[in-house]
Image 1 (cartoon, one colour):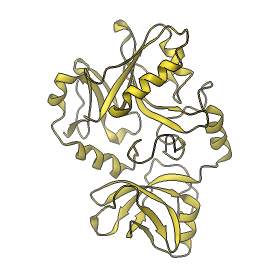
Image 2 (cartoon, one colour; image 1 turned 30 degrees about the vertical axis):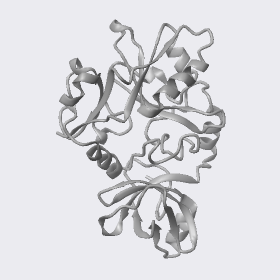
Image 3 (cartoon, one colour; image 1 turned 90 degrees about the horizontal axis):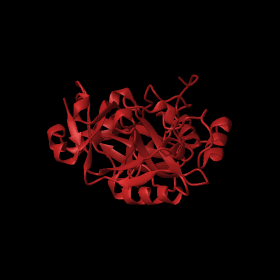
Image 4 (tube, rainbow, N blue to C red; image 1 turned 180 degrees about the vertical axis):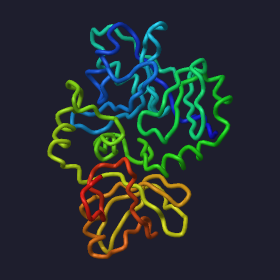
Length: 292
């Protein structure tokens, strides 16, 4: 069973009697759907609806306080804690960066650890990703025997993007980062920062740019941030890649036009084939029938 210590991930804890209301008014996911056994992908947005931070939200059992733990890129954990602190006002909450004392581990293709290991959940984005857990930092090596590259190859093969790797913070909307497809936006919850823009994109179907999975010809993947083209037209740019697969942030309409015209899509000059995962529900470039 592969398992990985994701050493580039940090943890921010939000605790206190107002923690749930406080977070629910700020982030994209509905905390009614988060419990000690169920996590949720979420994000804190700008007022213009762009992603400032993406994270996975865990909750501790109520018998030990019920605090919320945000699994975020470690380098951004201090900034996330600081940003949440700006919104505190009179709310009875405490925001702490616990990245030095807690670690994030993940695994797949096997039984997940028992609850005594820490906060252990099925990955909320996609069942095939496996499990994810927050454990004491000193215990991380027990669960993370494989290299981080194995985890990233796994998520890339499944078509799952990650903030700070496949899109830039402050630059992408949740729809562009596939958060609407990966249970990261709850459209039936109340208001949160950036909610009006995200809801408008959802109801009008105006997300023309999306991250899509691709297979590279020849088994090599292009570097991150290079241009994706078809003929003389720019479609977007590359995200992460591994083992001949990669993620591309592209304009769907331009890609569809290129495929209809028989043009080859290239990422960093390498021919690629766009590949639609079963979990994607929006119209995909090259489809001839209705979206699944």
